[in-house]
Image (cartoon, rainbow, N blue to C red; front, side, top):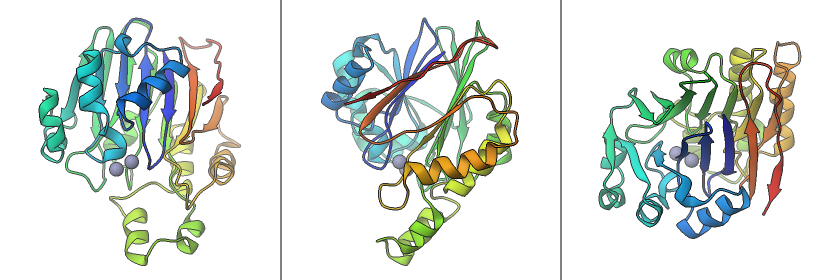
Length: 270
Ligand SMILES: [Zn+2]
Ligand SMILES: [Zn+2]
């Protein structure tokens, strides 16, 4: 299983998951031109992607989906609520599902998990290689963790996890109080402290890569996010690598195979 984070933050998100025979994209929050450029940096021809799964209707997760799907013949998958919230997806011939459904693409099974966020029917995504058993999760844009999500993110090999804001920086930052409350609320975004608690919760010896994502450019820094999560993992069974993804860098490939497979990582500056 390989994962590339093509960029992450409030200006766009897209993550490639590849099990060796099937490639899917989770979110397409960049223009198709920009997606092509970023995929090119990762050595991925856009035509090699089979499907795009949209987690929710916010433009930083789907603004390039319809155009890219048409251009490169991707199938588009989104919850029924997400399509309701995104009229621009109507032209993309979307295959809808209910949040919580499991989708299958070749030898890859994709579990969708409802999450708490200020969107119509948002999801997290857990992909499992049906043959090798490797598992990768993309969990971002959520305000809190439900029991269902906590169960779904156990025993992952690769986890891309939101670590949106430092609570003190959010309080001191440029946003009015109403926006601060929305960001920090149950339907907002996970703080570094939230991410640290979740990382600790799902840390196990097989977790090879933890990628912190959707960092706020106003109210967080990679150092803050990494320090918070690393402290939480210090005395855990986690033996993998922690990376903070940023908006303008293609990160990956994060590689996980069967237990004991060697992990590798590199970041490609654009
Ligand atoms: Zn977002
Ligand atoms: Zn969102």
